[in-house]
Length: 178
Image (cartoon, rainbow, N blue to C red; front, top):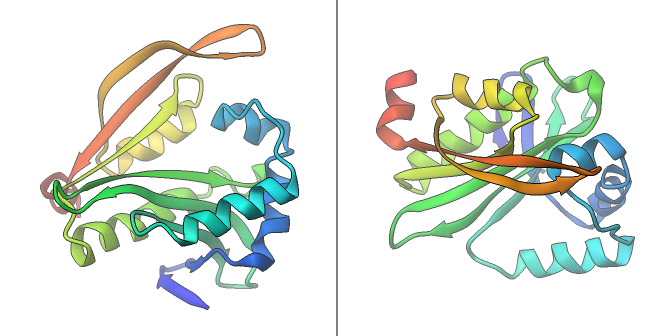
């Protein structure tokens, strides 16, 4: 069932029927590289994790779905929501190369940012991106995110150290971009 609607995509809550998709995706070497995932997760561990996430009131886990054919093309989460300080963070994964560089990720983030700022009245959203993921960083900057810091050589992946870039976006900055 649709949770939030966009022009070409919609976002729906993750349910049990999506666990197999997530399991398949986390086996993909490129997804593992882009997300810095180094441990292998079983289907059972994924199901257990998402069942646990459902019980938390500080996150929303969603699938990104194409409107034209209801195909799942990615997932995202609004997490670490701190209602007292009115901030949270986001993470996103577009599952297959053929769906990347088409603006779907940017559209999905725009939908969840609008929800976070307008419906949840959050003030600040942050995210992390690895330095080698130039395409994602460009998408985030298009939405108004600014680099706020660098965790130098934080990820050791395939024998190489990579920086983890912290980016942030304030509600007023997002509104100015619109």
